[in-house]
Image (cartoon, one colour):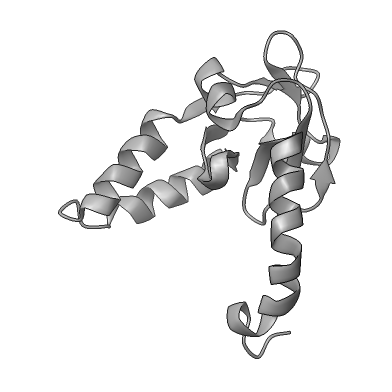
Length: 143
């Protein structure tokens, strides 16, 4: 499970330090791909395989499934962190997410998300009020 908020910076080569507490879990490899709201999703290989299996059972006759799968898999990049715990984010993914220097890496349960710091601040500001009001609709009977 991935939790928390971290604020690493991209270096000049497009590399980003993974949060130290997740480096061991991701040491054998991970997959980075486009996510919603112009962030990047970072999945451990096992979780990416689980999603792949789930999408393979979705009907290819559904246009939304085809469209989502094409973008999701075409933009995916398998990476292995270096000895310092850095991953290289491909230029096309950096461009999609607007990543230049200051980033935010958030834990999102089964994945990490990488955001441009300003985009994350804007998103979070817009969502915090709605979050405080949604628990009953999202988690009925749990919270």
